[in-house]
Image (cartoon, rainbow, N blue to C red; front, top):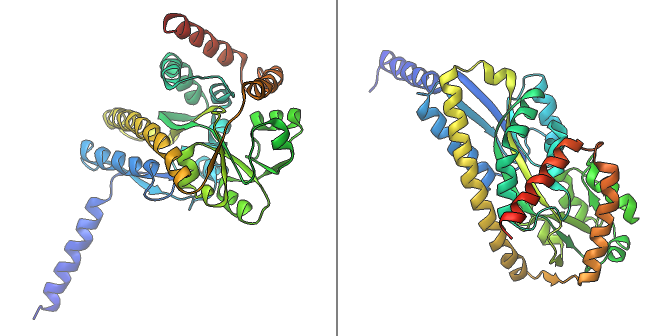
Length: 334
């Protein structure tokens, strides 16, 4: 039988081990991505590698599944020091650095090759932009090309006008486009979209195929429009003040590890998006094809919206740099 003295020693050792396992710098990171998703998985992988490379001096505490609130709430908590970072994709992207919206204009990119080229050329521009706004940029999170997911077929602008379309609140691209198109939109934060579909508050949503599955939106939809609308991405960001408290050498470890794993995540997400289209069809969603004339109608709307968005929703500088890099790529890689 163990003595009280022995029991005390065991408890003391457990407490000591627990304290030793706690890193000196614990970065609290939130994401809307649910546990088990590729986004949540990569954060845990980054955490494990950072702890190992820094000798447990730095670690992440991860809050998946929106338990810390939507992205607006997460940003507010970062400002007051309750959280130190987040993996953003949606409201968080446009609110932390509006110039990211210039990358997400509809029908801007035709392929991932174009995306990769432009992101590489714009790396310094966006990294400095985040720095000026008080964030440390640790890598892009590829969401993919967005498709329309609906309860009734959507192949034309008229089809969208006849249905209630979800809109991400305070998102300028869709605000302008829907207004010009005469579309009735219902603003909802991402965690509320599934309930909106279940209660018929909305009929149409838009997301990448894999996001549609991860967020379970496909369970309340019947159709997916076979037209990639725009490329979307997120970002892994850390509050600059919190990051500055970490020793310089450890900061470099974090940057290197995060960039490596975020790049791998992007390739994984692209594979998952390809597979997701098959999964959606296997779960009963029908593909809706759009004829070329209707595609041009959609594109004409975007052209009309561009005049309102450039220089307002995002800077003319970002828009022109992206356009120049795209021209260069298409000229050399037709």
